[in-house]
Amino acid sequence: MAPLVYFQLVSAGLFAIGVYGVLARRSAVLIVMSIELMLNAVNINLVAAASHLDGSGAFQRFDGQIIAIFVITIAAAEVGLALAIILRMYRNRATANVDEIDLMKW
Amino acid sequence: MSWILFFLLGGLTLGAGLGVVITRNVVHAALFLLVSLVAVAGLYLILFAEFLALVQVLIYSGAIVIVLLFAIMLTRSGEYPRTGDNRQWPLAAVTALALLGVISVAFLAGPTELTAPQSPSFTELGNSLFTIWAIPFEIASLVLLVALIGAIVIARGDREDG
Image 1: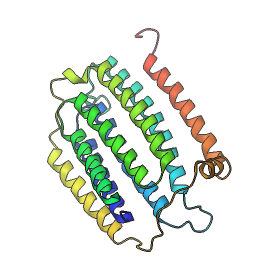
Image 2 (image 1 turned 180 degrees about the horizontal axis):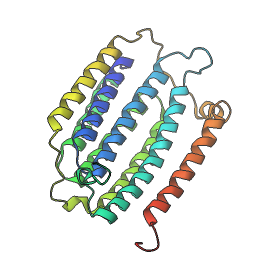
Image 3 (image 1 turned 90 degrees about the horizontal axis):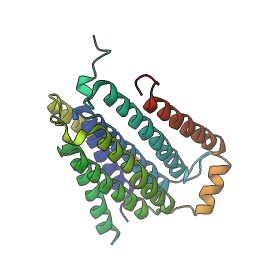
Image 4 (image 1 turned 45 degrees about the vertical axis):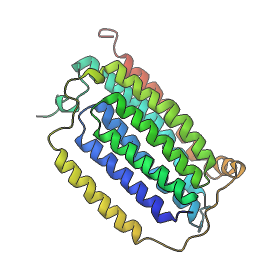
C-alpha cells in the first residue's frame, strides 16, 4: 500500500498541471478543463487524507470523503454555469478565446 | 501489487493531465481529461473509497466530460485557428513548477504517523451525510438548483437576440 505522501505528490503534480493550463491556455473550454484537473487534485488529497489519517476532535476519519462529494457537486454546478457563459460569450463575440474578451479591460 | 496499480494509475492521471494542457486539439484534450478522471477513480479504489470512485465515474466522466464536449461542439472551438497557448506560457510553466515545488516540500514535511488505510461502508457514509453534514448537504442541493436555473437564464438570453 502506497503511503499518504505518494498520493499527495500525485495530487500536487495534477494541481500544478491545472495551474499551468489555466494560465497558458487561450480557449475558455480548455481553461474549464484545467480547473477540473485542479478540483480533482484537491479531491485526491482529501480522499487520501481521509483514508490514511485518524479522525480527531469533532471530525470522523472519513469526513474528507464527504467534503470530496461536495467538491464534485460544486464542480458539476460550475461546469453547467461555465457552459452557459461560454455559449453566451460565443453568441455575442463569436469567439471562445479569452484573450479577445477584453470589453471590460481599459 | 498495490504499488504497481498505484504507479500505473498515478502515471496515467499525470500523463493524461499533461495531455490536457499540451495537446493542440480541443477534442483530444477532452478525451485526455476523460482518461485522467477515470484514472483518478482508480486511485480512489486503491484508497478504498468505493463510493467516491462510483461518483467520480458517474458525474465526472459521465456528465462533466459530456457537457464539456457539448461546449466544444457548440462553440466550434475545434476548428478555431489559434487555440494554442498564449504568449505567457513560459511564465505559466515557471509558476506551475514553483507551485509544485512549494506544495511538494510542504507535503514531504507533513505528518508521517499514519494508520492503515481503511474506508467507511456506504451505510456509515450515508449516516454521516444525513446527520452531521445534513445542512451542507441541503445547501449543496440549493446551490445546484440556483446554478442550473442561472445557467438556463444566461444561455437562453433575451428575447431580442435569442
